[in-house]
View (cartoon, rainbow, N blue to C red):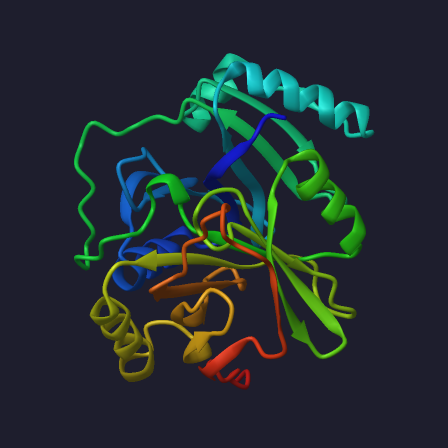
Length: 289
């Protein structure tokens, strides 16, 4: 079976690109890769970009871009997805070039979120330089992880486990609801999801990991002392991946998790666990103003 390698890029629709540039560069430490009146591309490593923020009327994540190994894997994934009833599009060479890839196929997940599989991600010739001095944990682990609120847990299990080949990391209890955490590389999870009733569906947060607790602490100070962004969840440590992090609301409403110390998985020895709390300490949800 072909394999997804990592989360390669995320496409976002936003009304205020200036706010996104200030937020992403000044707080998170991302570097501007491209800026036009209608587009802001941001990077956190040697890849040309990782976030593609496009001007639009809607606010939020519109597309997840998952990296695969090569052209044959795209063909195989297209067959697998089509046999399961998904309408798969082989995107044009111009489209792939715009995405910074050699080849792209696309489809909609069970909730209508656009998913792209691609190979041959473009590497930028210039060295990544964070405006804040942040050093991001990427490499084989991709840009980070995403958490999606979904309507039908079983349909997303089928898509990500049976069709895309993700592996189970563990579960977290959220009252009567379970969050399902999955991996496709040594990062503890690249994709997590939960069917939460009466919650807005879509990507709830994107996580960026750095290699130093002081980088996280300095960013946290900017939030709590300088109001650099609305604090959503205070500094704390997760139970399952052991990430020490905090969450802020992005200019488009969904959250950004910023942290360090995430657990790595060795598939030869790993076994899934069930946690009755999401956090060992901290991570207090903040009341909206």
